[in-house]
Image: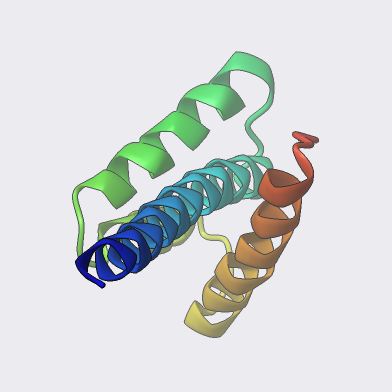
Length: 109
């Protein structure tokens, strides 16, 4: 009986670890896509756009609302009229796209 319980417990732990890893990958992918979108909105291309996307990913790693604040401040500085609602919608839309890409194994963008 103990063995069956331990096996079941291990399966739940393994599923939890897998789900957490998947969430992390999707979040990281979304952040890069968001950074590339924001870079394009700011008129950045090529290496500058890639560098900007990396800075967005880094802002998210700081926790809290750092990534959103970075985007908000950068759009304001560049005088891009993007509402908070637009930024949040883009974040949600790109999270869904990132989920599809991670699950399917594709990496467009």
